[in-house]
Length: 346
Ligand code: DAH
Picture 1 (tube, helix red, strand yellow):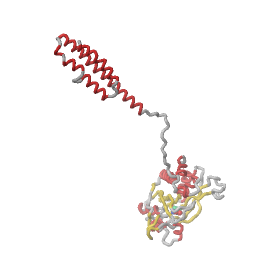
Picture 2 (cartoon, rainbow, N blue to C red):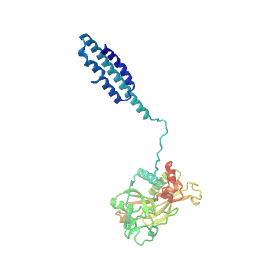
Picture 3 (spheres, rainbow, N blue to C red):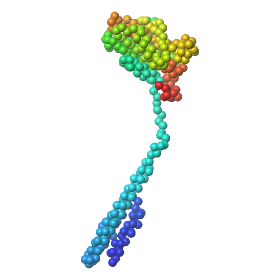
Picture 4 (cartoon, rainbow, N blue to C red):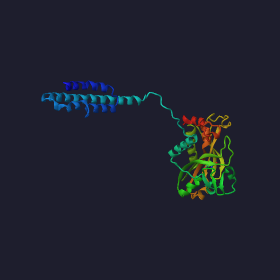
């Protein structure tokens, strides 16, 4: 019977068609071609009324089986197509984790910031807090409240940039001392104040119109020069090595009395004398002293009750000594070759 032959041929044709089916859309079309209203099964069914009950039954059973087989084959093909898609995706997104990575250029902490951070670490560990003040400062705080009245000869060393006769770029971090003293109103105090300062200097290998300092101020009961020496010895050893010594020499600063210049023992010759320390065995690193009674009084403290010490560290000077740098301008010109050398340093 033609119909039965036709039914037999359906699955063979489907196999052929499925071979050429490469994606889900094609598959959907093939499915519609075979199982849809105009498909071969529907076609056979449309002629059913022409057959005897027996044949109808036979055709019914066979076409149901074929329908099931068509559905299974299409499902299997769908799985194959989807697997192939996933495999192709996996293949194209494959990462070889053993390949060398892309190197990013990383920055480095600027040596001056590194010194400031080291100082902060050290002094915070000794109970100090970090204070800051404005870089545009008044004449009053930069000089007068530090015992440098107008016309004082010590002002000559600290000529700076004036915005007007009363406002200037601070020439030292010392004004933060006065500001914090007034804020504390006579109470004990233990601060460091790192920051930028300015002077009307021509730039050369050892001078810069802008540089950095770190002020220190400790006020309390019974604070002595021995405490100052201890605080600075710790600093010198942290910065330059445990075997270093410091030496205090008499000096003059208007805001301290007595005042000292502090030297660290030379790391090149260990005190014997060499070209680095100009044969003295010592290298000057900072100025310090016991806070002058006038400064205490002017800033709200009673020198009979509270005394203390102050110091002023030049950050560039420390960095130049620590890292053996011979020209201060290297810190500011932003030459990556210079800065990159500090990647390994700490
Ligand atoms: N301000 C001083 C300067 O710039 C450094 C200094 C010396 C600061 C002695 C102090 C100090 O606090 O006690 O030269």
